[in-house]
Image 1: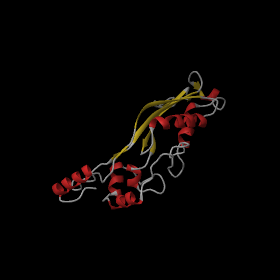
Image 2: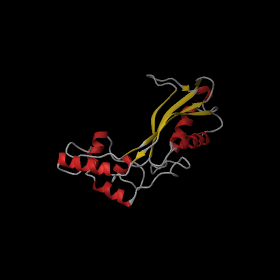
Image 3: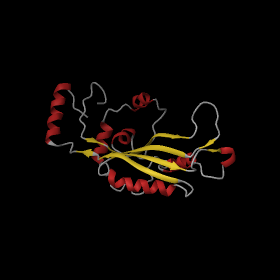
Image 4: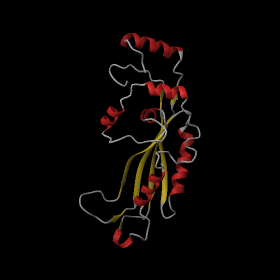
Amino acid sequence: MLGPDQPALTYGLRGMLYTQIDVQGPRQDLHSGHWGGAVANPANVLCAIVAALKDGDGRITVPGFYDRVRPLSSQEREEFREVPFDEKGFLEAAGAPEPFGERGFTTLERATARPTLDVNGMWSGYIGEGAKTVLPALAHAKVSMRLVPDQDPEELFPRFEAYVKKLAPRAVIVNVTNHHGATPFLTDPHHPMLEAARRALGRVWARSPR
């Protein structure tokens, strides 16, 4: 619900593809003063891979990622515009200075009806206090993707894995793990059962749900 005075009906949920990228360089951590510039640094490589997964407009670059994305209809986009969405309050709740995402879509559309790709965590090398000139042997990232109809996590994972490995230089070994996935869900917003729920919510709140 967008607020305590605005009832809502959910007729769709995004799915998920959750992965982990592991980059292996040397057998063990090395001294960057002795080995830096002579062998590939897995942390640098991982950063380059992650940066290449989306372009400057927030569009995911994995080949074929959007092939089965069901486009939003003009009616759906009009209904999105009618939703009393407080973008300023949404950003304040997030603590974000301004919105960012796939060009051509509103903040509400990006957050609910478009696919995403996000890094959930990264770790590598020395992260303690002070300085330690380590060239790490390993670097890791957890990357999740929110999926929309008619995307299939089992179909997308091999494409994601192949693309990640293609982005990596031969000087490292890359493994990509599929931790889990879930298919997106969408039903007809005008299904008789949802219409009945809409009428019931309207009577309780004295206003129509969104």
